[in-house]
Image (cartoon, rainbow, N blue to C red):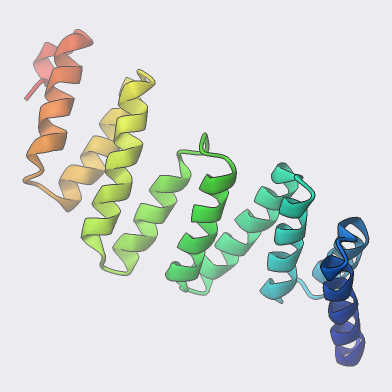
Length: 169
C-alpha cells in the first residue's frame, strides 16, 4: 500500500504530466494508484480521462464501467449515470447501458427519465430487428408507464409485421 503522502505526490505528478501532455507516463502512475488504492474512484476517473486523451477508448470504457459499478454499489445513482453517459459518448453501440441508466433512474424514483431511456433502447432494438429484446424492454416500459400509447402502438405494429399477430395489441 502506498502511504497517503506518497499517494498525493504521485497523483500530483500524474496531473503535472497530464498538463504537459505526457499521457502515457501519467497513465502508468494512475494505474499504480488504481492498483494500490482500488476504492479511490478519483484515480480511476483520472485514468479513464487520460485513456480518452490517448484515444484508448476500450481501456477508458473498462475504467468507466468499474466506476459506474462502484457508484451503483454506493447507491450514488446520479454519478453512476454520469459515467454511463460517458460510456455511451465513447461507444454508442453499447445500447444495453441505457437499461442500466433506466434502472438507476427507477431507484431514484425518476420514472419519466427511466421511461425515456427505455424508449431509446426500445427504438434501437426495433430498428435493429431485435424483436425479443424489444419485447423485454416493452414489458419494462409498460410496467413503469402502463398507459404509454406510443410504445403500445409501435409494439403492436412490430408484432403484426413480424408474424406475431396473436401478440399484437
